[in-house]
Image 1 (spheres, helix red, strand yellow):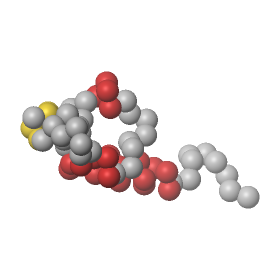
Image 2 (cartoon, helix red, strand yellow):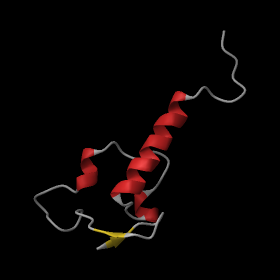
Image 3 (spheres, helix red, strand yellow):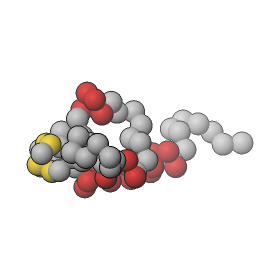
Image 4 (cartoon, one colour):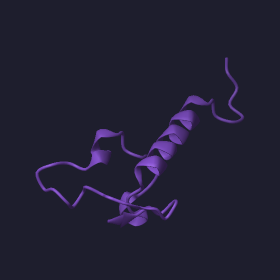
Length: 68
């Protein structure tokens, strides 16, 4: 079992459970700007939420940047 660093929920992290099968999170895009080794593994709900937040941030124009 692992504990999510964001919500503290206990969840099954598959990274070390099955050497022949990748963890469920390997099917998702990597989380940019965060060191998973430092933070630990996020639960499915928090990882999805963080990925959505990153995607939204990437789609917004940079603050103060003027468009031609």
